Length: 156
Image 1 (cartoon, rainbow, N blue to C red):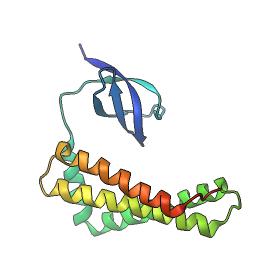
Image 2 (cartoon, rainbow, N blue to C red; image 1 turned 90 degrees about the vertical axis):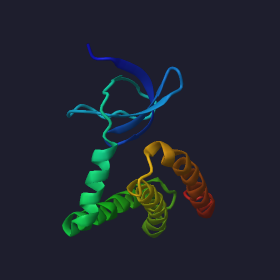
Image 3 (cartoon, rainbow, N blue to C red; image 1 turned 135 degrees about the vertical axis):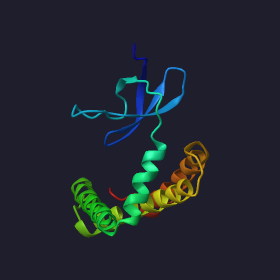
């Protein structure tokens, strides 16, 4: 019999989620198959799997870093995502200024990229996710506060 856990999605990105259980524990989860995506606030039932894929994630990261064509594609995907964010920000802003939206998107994407690079550096250096996580959260809070204060009240 497969064990399951009910919880609340507190963060989601693609197929990956951070789920808070009833006892307050935060667990990483991911959606399998082609079903609909979960979003923050959704109640989900997770199948408990004893396997942990941290090693496989690092293997994939090393492969991307060491393969020029994959690294180039990763950079291209980041630029596409930044452009899509700029488009959405322009739509949300009062004046729909595409230049200011592109500046804001670049700041947000650059912040995320710097945070991810530091996390990857530490993980590839041999630290565990559990060791990196508290500093990663604290850095993200500080970094995005800096971006928010730098952007001020934009968009109106």
